[in-house]
Image 1: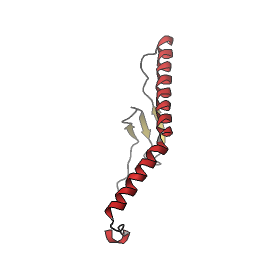
Image 2: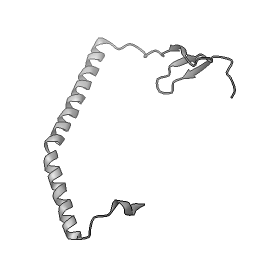
Image 3: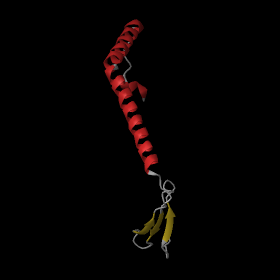
Image 4: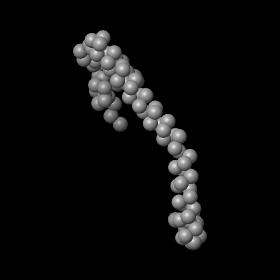
Length: 99
């Protein structure tokens, strides 16, 4: 096994942070996060916040509608599967036959 003799640098592929790692202990010695870019104006930040709030409300409303109809949908699926099983007439598969 080759021993490292120098500390080494890593670059995070997702956020771009530069990380310096100690070669002996594997501990992080330092990290430098890249800047976030130009600062937004207050009005732009308020608009972004309103957009995020509206999107969150839309996602919640959609999830609520899906949850309201969930019992109906599950009942229909159960009835269809039950009718299909009655029409088929074959016994259910044995789990040990799949080996």
